[in-house]
Length: 588
Image (tube, rainbow, N blue to C red; front, side, top):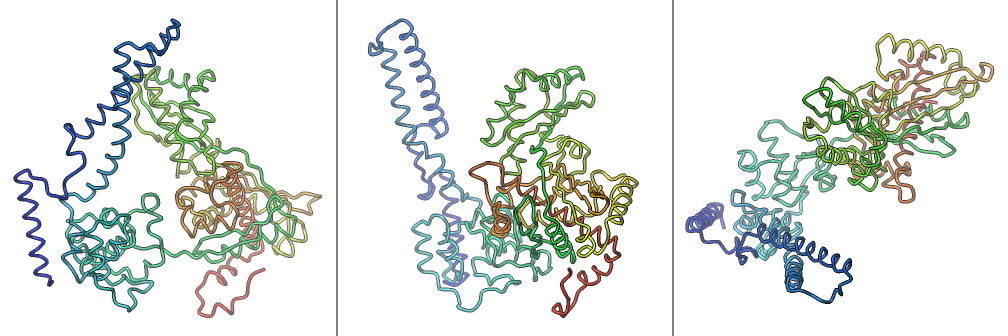
């Protein structure tokens, strides 16, 4: 069938649908199981739900009265018999029709104003890849199965290369034209095509045509697009490659860890690796977890400041904490409310909730718990106006003193004692020089700059690299990189005590990007993949200490390079392009 004939047949089908709609006659494909019901499905379901609960309440109330009056339960009055009959009828209905709503939502997904994918495939026998894509969907109709059978087999030649858009079928061309013209929303391709990979291919090609710019060089093949649907990234057109290096072994708390780092900055992995080597040679580092609690701070408004203060006193009163905790904890089996701290700006109240979140980073978890508490408080404080679930007193993805002082996520201290011989042979400097440089650079220099949580050399470098490799939210490196690096001569001035204090490391080992294949592999390398079954939350806490230990290694190495005057030399050696990388010798 040629293209002109196909367009004619499409027009006939559109006219047929229009004719049926004009005369209020349902087409065979529009018939639903609920058409046999005397009322719309939602009204029918609502009627039987109401009947079930009201009759159940009536019977329980009557039976309680019988028990109190010592009346035998088997002696039934007419209202009780009628109630039992109604209860049985509602149970039978709900058991029989409970899934109708879900089934109808799946059936009605393809609306009249969207293109008919199956019909297009039946009309276009030159579909190439299209029929195979539809067959890969979760459910196939007889028409779709027939289309899959009749569709020609794709060419045996290669469909794509790593950096090019795959060859497109004739049906794909129709969809691309619809996206370019605006008739088909680009964001809806995944749901309409039921194929995430094909949606990315079509969206990419449409984008190139609309912008007139090529995306060659942006990889498309070799990625599981279904894994990001609805949780990691919307409207994908490819993925970005970031090399992952490893530093270590990092000897921390008596165990060795090989730390994955995703970065495009030369010298970073090599420098952190040198710090790990020095720590290992000195007997390893140790860590302490000080706090573990994610925060969310909604902002609410009252008519007067006095009224806002009343809610502040109420929420901070220990007598009310248990009740608020029960309301909050209903949102999750892992989220547990720890404390609520409030501050007032005029008649506006900011309530900072802190809770444990298991192995998840926990932003969604704490937000749901906060919403539960706000709904509960609305009863006693009906004049409370909820302005926003987040009022920036949390504070998320922004430098803030509240995180530096109170902490957010995991608060960790990591320390090590570096032997004089290691400082001299591995780090190529001496203890006195390092102590002086740390005081003048990390402490005094940062104070002169008015730094907020930035009393370190480059903690953000290591935090961000590990975050990207392990699927954390890279934007949270802002507060997660809060760090103060301390150095002091010990053991008569021979050895060096170095520590990093990081009050707001926000990490998780479940949810978000942690479930992607590459990031999951990096978590597995560290031994913290997924949720801990034995001790919920232990994997995410361990990851936070590993990050702090890696920062300790990075701080030690960079400060030593600056003290020894090796910084520029190292960057010229490792951070410059070289055609013959085999000639570059590894750093000590």
